[in-house]
Length: 182
Image 1: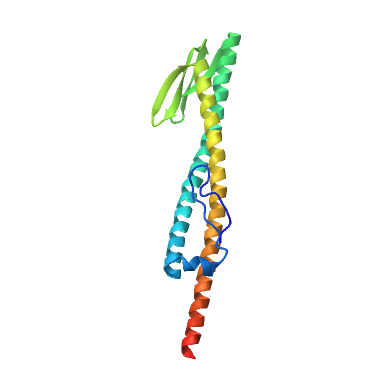
Image 2: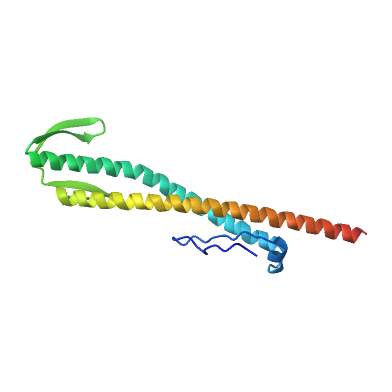
């Protein structure tokens, strides 16, 4: 009746089966309207998940370049420290107000971890944290992209199934009306 597909993707998003034979499919359902209602609920769920994952993908796409910039800054601090050089920097005091500073022999850096949390780390540990966070973010971006592709395929399958069930129901009602009028 339906093509063999895994029941979910690796992160638990359920797969929709393509309805090969609408007539056979509707034998197991209460009515075409009930089947359409179930399919529309699945469609709504998929669209909701797609919206959430698209927002998550956008968020990750914004965070990854920031993480890379921060990692580069920490790497710069490490290289300057190894060479024994002083670092000239500008610090933002408030909006549009900066001051110059000289940093010699930096030992620690502070990283924003999110949720208004800043943690001070030794430079080497900060680099390890940043590298780990960057790798995790890139992995999540890959998973979200994969999930979005999976969802688009499921949405298309549900849309096709809805159209096929609806058209079958219209034809069946037309035949019943013609049979009743004879």
